[in-house]
Length: 418
Image (cartoon, one colour):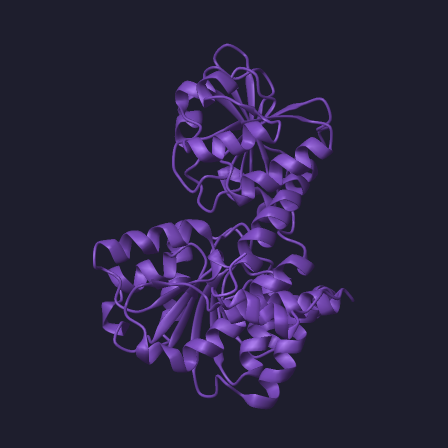
């Protein structure tokens, strides 16, 4: 039995899901083939993901392939209640998600999704897989395999595997080129700045934007912030990534130095306390704090609350102002959670088209391949990544060259020499 906010919102949800579907031609093609081939017939899928119109496209594709799907939210602030209603009322999925639900309710929903006894699990941040391994070990014997679609979740899974704790194979869908190169770089880059602008209506041109982390998400943010006229400073712990940022013309500083200069701070590291109390104490009046890493631990929100003598909640949507003892005001967006999903609508459908096509095709592969995979973190097969890119190019009416037989022979032989 689903647990959603308001089933009467289904009509609005369907309209928005259909709008998003227009921007997802690759996933539509996969869905059409799934409907004919039914590669997931009889499988139960439990997913912990952002409840958005784009996610609805994935759920419908899995259903077209024959799977039954139970869905819980991976972030209470990103849940779109109309999408949840549409998935239940119009598309026959089980959904356990309500916008703004508290931590207790969040985990209760994950447990409800797991009660369906899934064969495959899809995760976004590893909370569902973690719950299976900590609280619902009784279900581990029935789970054949899983997918993980975000960097933070992959980090946690690798640690589980290193400690011998992971009990079934999980595929790091996040690590495919058509996911992290496009979803993280182009999706996060655009949607994060969209969320900051919607929440604050601030002009980014001329501002100093400090970006913590220069992985694919950080690169996308830096490129787009520079394009809007901002001065960009990057903070990093990885010398190679820091060097990459410097050679691309971005400033590189430790956070302790950048804290005093920044106007806007964006964390995208997958780690905790990237902006801590010492950094907060150095920031200028009016500094804006936003997080686009998966969990709300990258900015030390508790320390910010302890430092404040007054907090103005909701001065704008998803915008809280913390007044410090010396009169400085620090502005926190989306409670330190994912600003692109809480204050905006997440990635554009055209980007999620590739990520969710990766997910769907990986589920198809896992339906049979799980039997020969060890309990570990696995890569998506290269042919899936290549097929998604090929379909996306075709949908954009872009053609590329093909190797001639002579070129194929040359690449696969060492004998010709120079």
